[in-house]
Length: 207
Length: 316
Image 1 (cartoon, chains in turn purple, cyan):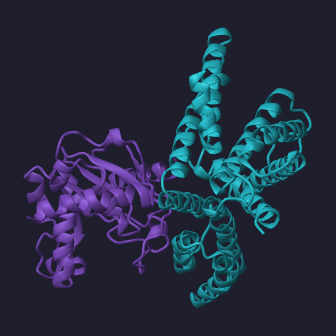
Image 2 (image 1 turned 45 degrees about the horizontal axis):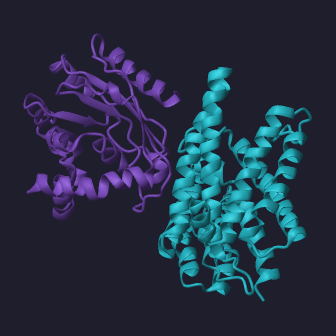
Image 3 (image 1 turned 180 degrees about the vertical axis):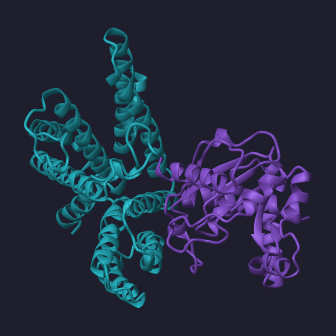
């Protein structure tokens, strides 16, 4: 039922919205790996980010793409939780509780990857308020260490924060772009790996 | 012979549409043969542009030939896309979000006045109501730094791309000119045809004869030769297509003159906007042309001027 509703939502709302209202342009689409799983690592400045990235995939594949989202935010009430789970198929992780109980908050992600699902991951951890990219958190490194064979695809999303900045609820039709870089494998020294990813994203930003 | 007879029975707008399609066929064949005889990169670019013209002519003809609601929605979409391209290249502030929302909401409202043909409201809605409301909405965001810059950006965008372009839609819904076979549809065709051909011939004359730069800091490729060559050609075209209008020969020349000068003005004003924002094109919608705005920039000037002159002299 949820899959069916999601496909209707994509056909009749999300895709026309992205193509006609936002006028989304995509560069480097060929860099998305054909083989699952992979991790799309993007900068985060707007609620549109996830929706725009999901709109790139064929309808048959959307249920295999899981946007990683914070449970404390997206499951703050029943209605919002139902909506985002149904329409965006989010994979919620519990940042706060897990920390208190010394559990690994990334456990559900690893399970999903083992099941052959790909991730949309925002390594900054939260939306930027200025549109500028913030520091990357180390969460993505934990994943890369456990699954060194999974490619990490750097993505830069431009203008999304102008269309729908944090704190606004009506999107405006600014043209937005998705720029996708070549897949990376985060290896070696942790700081170096994180810097490598950030450099790749900045290169896409300035392209 | 029979075909010619059938052609003469068509309305003036359809005849003109037929001529334009004929010209496109001619241009397509001409460029294809020139490419064979004297190969060069220029023909690839020109060929690309002509291909886009086919697309634009087809869409425009369909938009004005189908029913009035479709036409009005088409022009509303034109305004929407133009305003969208304009705000994207600008440096807007976070605090402008709500005011920009209202600016976009103006589009369906303005075209609704066209749909119900409420001329009084159509003509004052943006310059009076919206221009008073938008600065107040910006003030409510409580960000005084950059206020004047933001409000002039939003208001100029509305003026050019919503108010200006919506005059094409209002022209289309105008009734028959008393004592003439011309109607809103044929007048709109005349306006758009002359504006676009003026653009094209300014480009062609500039490419072939252009020497003396006319506004080098704004638009380095524009020359006096291009401007004047385009102007003369447009006067001739105005005379040829006079059958679409109620104009006598001097009036046709006068209107063509207004369109040529206003079209040039619209073009260079939008060039100044692009230059100020630091971009070359408004977008990449139309291959070979740039964005939608790179194509309709002249119309932002010619449409309101043409509309008001015609309305003053020909609709009592």
